[in-house]
Length: 479
Image 1 (cartoon, rainbow, N blue to C red):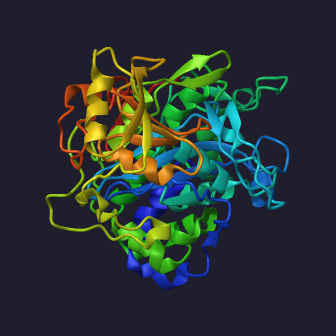
Image 2 (tube, helix red, strand yellow):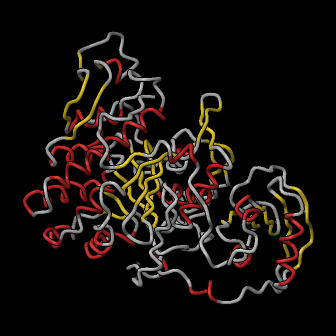
Image 3 (tube, rainbow, N blue to C red):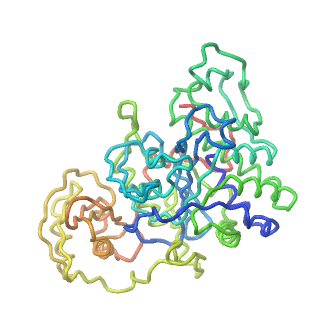
């Protein structure tokens, strides 16, 4: 389920299945998507992919768990760069501790924000069988400061059908795997379900492979994420190797759309087709897979800062994993995007001079460079901002500049962010607007605010990136 939507969005770009796909795309309500959202910041797009492990409906015979509540088993944010020739999928561990903002439940009421809770809890808000994809989208936007243009939910049954339709996917295993490895509560080892070494899996066996956790490596979800990334890379490679023709692609597209539930912005064949066509020039080598910077915190996973901030800033600036500018601004071509609700073209506001008249801010130095807060305050005052405070931040390890804003101040925060290349805005319960300066500003405080930030992906992320053309047996971490 990890990469099913990524694949179908590539596959569905072929027009042969166009008419047949029209009636098979399910959508979820967008009513629960927060009204306080980051703006679109590049010519690319961000797609949130959620793998649901609900055991309801057709999934009941495939899953190993119990219960009817939809849960988020896997999630990643797919960033398609502005040049539409590069893409990166950033995995977010389900056990990662995050803040879940206010979300709409099935009763129509909005919940209270939750602090320092597991990421997969967002999908379960409301405890319905179909889950709460809008809440997960709100959480990802709050975490990253990036606007999610589309959200796609994948289920077990559809994943199983797709891997069968493609004729199986090559995988590798470091040891023999038995039934108890997949179901640790089983009293005996049981029969062998996977032999050691390279092999091809499809259907139920493919699903067992991507769900396998306890009997391999250190038994962690992080190790499983690595295997899932390799699986998706091999799946995409397999599809492309078979050629883009109606005989191979129509069964795949039908299987994939049967498995997907999407936001209204992708809820018709023409919209799905348009988005898919915008991705058709992304080759295997330029399709990357990474994991958000993390560390263990007891039995859970903590997101590591400032590395995570630097990763989000690099995506916002359309910088690839290896540091290249993939914004496509020099190509003279504009991206095909929907209206404002579906993540439309970036606002031309970047060309308008910044005026801070009526905006009050506090400035904090989030680096070890002395005098940076005073320098930024001078810049702000020169643009008619009112600066109430200059001080040292609680942490001095910020890479990207962050603009925190209180209720009702998102527009003012976005105006402020335009003065700091690569800055991202983050909603905060604290009143007012706070500018927390990062090392990117310290390195180039006089940069053109309209230019992309010199952001780079942290080496801890870049060094472990996987490409879709990698050998499925090479450089694979088992946990």
